[in-house]
Image (cartoon, rainbow, N blue to C red; front, top):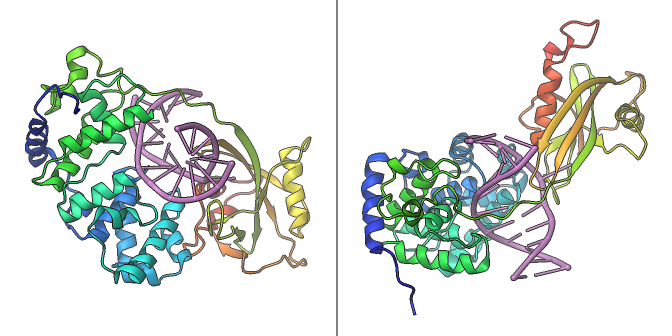
Length: 368
DNA sequence: AATGCGGGGGA
DNA sequence: TCCCCAGCATT
């Protein structure tokens, strides 16, 4: 028994499509319906804002203009282009999916829900976005923006992430997705969430759905969606060492498996119990075969999904008469070499180092 | 400092 | 069905 709706569902699509024609954004991936472009943009946009994605999207397509070139590339080259965007599993899934597209689908992006869903990194919502935008198939999406809009439109008082709520939300998303112009509808509802139906300050006076919105009618638009409190994330401390030699810095490469795969960073460690940050930095220096003093540069704060990081950066000169191991995972690099992409926290550390002037010395680091 | 977001994979 | 995951913009 379908639950009764508080309004005619066709009304929602009509209003949204009219609004989108006036107020929709002009974005690079909207100038095409190439499924590869749509897919790439949807993956990049997961957990990431439009402004951050645009330069990455353009650089990515310049390097990998089609599925074949992406599939043929080594996964490290893909990670390199992703460096700084975060959630690197997305890049690995993207590459793995491209390989499968070439192997199993002749390099042609499939157009059925079952096939699209079978690709790594694509779940129900992303599949719906690709099918509607690239193939004009009426497939629902339920990303964060749409979830917030539907919670308000239907005045859903259940916790929005509960499985009961998810079922109802998907059902509503299906009912509202039109048969005509599902691609424009998908873009329209995502735009509405990004620009009007905002999490804290919904701009209801500018909303084409205001006349239908049950939360607004009940004065609940700022209370919904109902979210559960997030548990506090732990703080971790680490120490990193910028070891200099002839204007170059020692960088190490992380393994290709696990966290931040294949990205570069300064040698680093966690202080042992009872050890100060400076003692840990000296220990790092010794382990690397250097000697002499370390100087404190400063502290970087970085937030990850599940912990906060406080990174203390030290700098030291490499001793010229000692050989410091250089190998595949360890290199002397001029600062900011694009071929040695640093992950986020260590990008911040490098920025700190560039701005830093050692006491009693002027401008040495400016050459970095 | 708190909040919000997508999806896969394993327990 | 839950938990976990090496970001970042916004407020």
